[in-house]
Image (cartoon, rainbow, N blue to C red; front, side, top):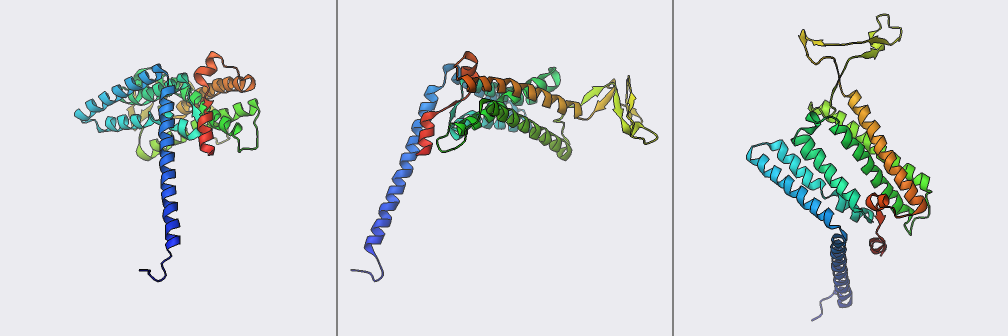
Length: 296
């Protein structure tokens, strides 16, 4: 029986198209699985061991925190487990292969910042812990910026080519931008939620035009500050409590140091393309096979 208005050939073509699209999606899914398996095979044994040990420690801290009713620590552990997926996500999205040295640095950095810094209170108990992490983060941010620019620089469909110096400059600027945005984030959280992400600093000297009684815009200095009294009570800190400024500027300075170090490494790698020990450990490489799949 033929139904009026029913086009058998059109319906057949539509079905064939749907089947073809379904097979195409299945093939793409299988291709991604093969890529993921190949990516894991390329990982060094040391990288896989570091991942396993760090994850086991985080899960152990998570279980202990849950039993002790430390809800904030539980959330920190869950966030850490999510952040540990970042290297794999970066590799897939950017089409690069992170070398063992850089990937291990990223994993240890996440663990040191979240588990040791926040839960174990290393930010308070260990001197310069925060500054060491900000130096490392500047290095990592520059590596990410370098990878993104290098992928575009060598992409078959992009018509420009950056010089080694400009590529290093892009990596440096990317790192400093992320560092500055992070400091704005810390400032916002402290003011909106009454936290202390910007760790305060006790100083013995201040200089400000606000101290000029004549309002002549002349900076007045008060030195050798031993105590500060607030609402009639002594803070007992041995000096003036700076609210975040010294911490912010110190973080940006050490971020700059980390960014400069990687930018210099990236410059010489891009200029000479020599596979030295340093570049093999820390400079991301464009994954040609994955890039070809993305083009297809």
